[in-house]
Length: 460
Image (cartoon, rainbow, N blue to C red; front, side):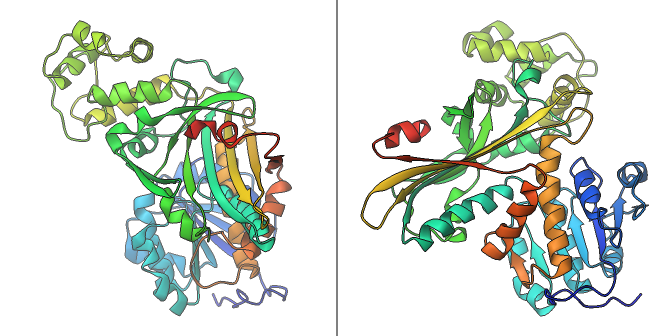
């Protein structure tokens, strides 16, 4: 079918419908499909390796359909992508690069909510030659965090102000009334992705000096922080140094982006790591082995009582609640992390009717041209709807779907690799998100109202 090229004619009405291919059928795809299907002229195809999951996502929308598809079939992917205007890659991150290659070959735009990797960035020249946009980092974190941060940064720069400090924390956690387990955390999908990131080192900037937190020390870094009336803890995430250039703040002296959890989570995860449960190698145990036997073997036969003496007791109690030291039988023939993640999913899954919550806060210390400083925060909180979209699904899915629509409409008319950090992108998206009740509340304090140490107490 011939496709009419309206993509970069932002001032014109489109001559026919826009076609969207959504790869994957996880929880975040439902808000994407719902949003895109609001326009009856759009058509949306959900392609997934498990057909029934795609059918559930498409159910109830006259302009959505489902099909079975294996994203690992790169040749078929190139052919399939050619039939659409925008491909939304909602599959696991390792597949995004091959999806991007297929979209370049098919000359079809692409969206992902995942971090932009160096491998992906290397496709910039090819994407420009194909006259397509490949936008990454348009979910929650990364995604919505970029939109708000860049709006505040651009406003400050427009007034000849300098960003001295930028601190950003974000986390998905159980809503307070559903925070009912010792870990203060729950999962709505496979926990492995959330646990794997705890194996990364973190890099950030503090008073002009780069700081590296080794992976083995990441959980020990955790600091208390109070946000929106919640007592939480925070720790740095990945490489914050990259955002000095991405956000165009060469003047910044302190720059850190990180993750939020309820207090105690990091200490518990550190103990799990110390006990060997984050290991990724195959670790054979006898058939029918118990968790207690497994932990002992992971620790060179040490007695459970000996291991307990060297552990923080609140963290030990939490792992005991999980069943780590019980006589229950463990799965066979898997890496310790996989065994651990199966247990996390069993014991820490959201039940029907339970709600999650996302908390995202930016903190800026801004210097005026006359040398005076002020403190500015932007806070976003959102709670999931019982038996509806989770807060995480909505805040990842909606911005991705909105960005795809703006690309299809020609409102976003860039070619090449793209992040949502320019006004022509963050402006419309923040307005559209506000219509879904996803918006920030900003506050400002002057120097005579608060000290720097009080404002960013978690860094002192």
